[in-house]
Image 1: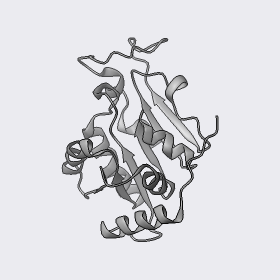
Image 2 (image 1 turned 90 degrees about the vertical axis):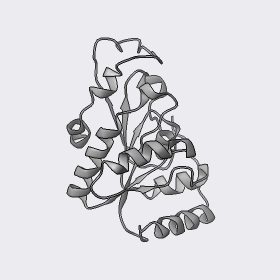
Image 3 (image 1 turned 180 degrees about the vertical axis):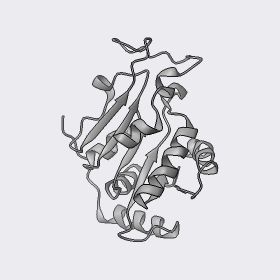
Length: 184
C-alpha cells in the first residue's frame, strides 16, 4: 500500500527552526534514529544504536537526530551518553506532522517497529527497519519510500513470529548486529 501524510509549510518551518536551535542548519544532511517501541522486546539495544551512530557519523559525516515521545527521553539520553559525538535529541518536541516534516528532511531513518517508521515511509524516506518478535509482513514499512527490513531467524521467532512481550533474553533483536545495519 501507498499512504501519505501531508506536511504543511508551517510544520516544515517549525522543524527547521527547531533543528537550527539544536545546531543542524538548513540544508545540512542528517539521519534519524527511532529507537523506541511500544514494548521493550521490539527495541534494538541502545548500545547498538550508539555504536551505529558513532560509525555512521564517522563514515557519512552527518548528524544524528533521535526521535521519540517524552517517555523516550531517558532511552535517547542513554544512547547519547555512549556516543562520541552527541546526537540531537528531539523526543517529545514534535507533533505528528512536525515529525513527518523532520523525517522528510532526513537522508536515512533507522527505526525499530514503530509508528515513526510508517511516518518516514509516508514521506518517501529510505528506512532501515529493525524487526524481532513481530512480523514485518504484517506491521512492516509499506509506504512509498525505499526500505530494508532486517530480521534474524533465531529459532523462536519463526513463522509465526512469537510476539512474546515478556521474553527474558530478547535474542531476536540482539541478533541484529551493527554491521548488518551498516551493510544495509
